[in-house]
Length: 244
Image (cartoon, rainbow, N blue to C red; front, side, top):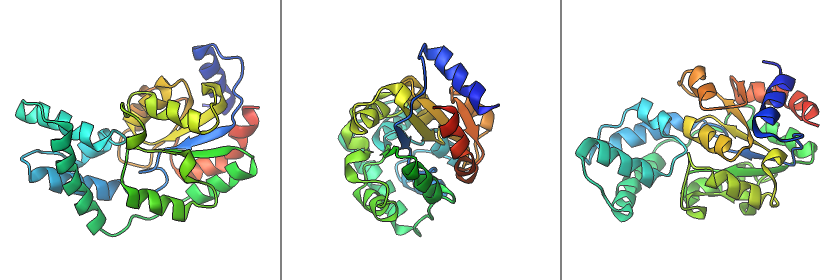
């Protein structure tokens, strides 16, 4: 679908007069890093220790949600009882340990080049992640430090309701300078993250970097679909030009 038509449909849906971007808000895992294969393995191995079956498909489908929320839901569904956030955190700590024992995932191809284009267009860059792991945030600041700073990162500890609720991206707008929804883009690869961006009424670009059907991402309400971060990087200039 043409970019101009996608923007027109977004504006009509929300009753906004214009899309005037001042910021781009990125998810982290599966967008800035090709990390989801590692996360899927860590989820499967850690949850098995607690008698929970979590497949790779489950990991991709729940990506972006706070880890403790995912665990509490899985326990409720499979074992029929509620657990406290503290107990879920203990389980999540094992998942985190396994993840950090694995080889570091590479930066997503095209992501750094895309940030350079955004920077050259004088837009603010933010990151909105369901993760709260400081080693991952430290690496993010190291790898993308020319474009991202700590003040513009939203983590699991900044909000009470994580994705798919709009709160993380509403906080992203706030950290980007108290922006309105029509003043930003969201870049997401996960169904729950896309749902969060759409719920925040932000123009949400879905990038299918995983193994989920593209139709699933569109059905979550994404305004625009890209097959990779490299394709988004290639199309970025047209997107910025069409929105101004």
